[in-house]
Image 1 (cartoon, one colour):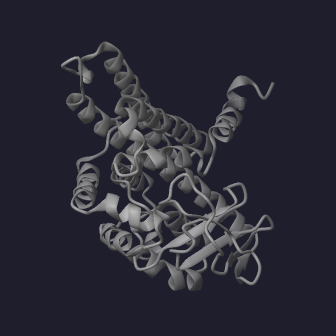
Image 2: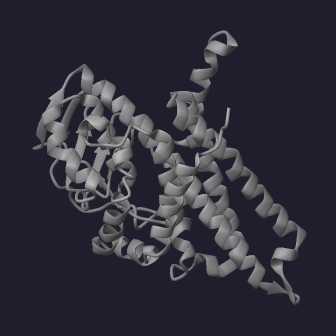
Length: 334
């Protein structure tokens, strides 16, 4: 078995990396955090034009998938670029609507979402209480504990967030528009949650890689005692540990994308999230005092690592899912 991306998949990832690299993403992220979505929406539309969100939708609804491996590759690049916006939630909504099997709902919402003309956010049972970037989203979907799917009204004021470009709102659950209900909603929501966890893991991996890359470049330039600090053994060890953690997460991400098994996806999210957070701590310590400044572009990625580590499955929750998945192999829970 060749457990590596194909040439076509690599070309897709490279095209996204070039697209994001040519765009003023850090400036767009800062504007997004201030409530100005225009610059980020412009880059979003170009990314959607590559088919990024269409990968999560079924071909029956003019999508390209579902192709989880390709989507994961794309979201690694999304995280690496530092792009703002509810990209994971928009892709998860595409999965939900595709799995729901309601042609009228799919035709109503999917064309705009896949083309990048509309953004969506999503709240699910067990997925966290916050609607991410609900002020920028044209559609705010909510699935209740009872299995009801609805559109929620526009939210109130944003809540404090450690990442200004990841704006949090409490979903307004009254006065919404009911869309569907029943067991099919529960099944579709379960699939959407797995995709959301997987793509968040991919985003974590990209964030960690960006932090490591920027830190490596910095330690080549910063000097102490007339020597670049990157030449010091302790710094090398720290960077090597960060790289190993990210490289360990990568095959787990591909395994989760290939199988979409809850245990595999949880393992990918756990390792990628922890590796991204460790990369943030390494970057902060090796940059020194300048690492704390918001003016430095590094802050765009530093602020993402902790929220993404906890989004769509905290480390403790992901460990529990992995243990549940392994229980039959150990002869049952102990």
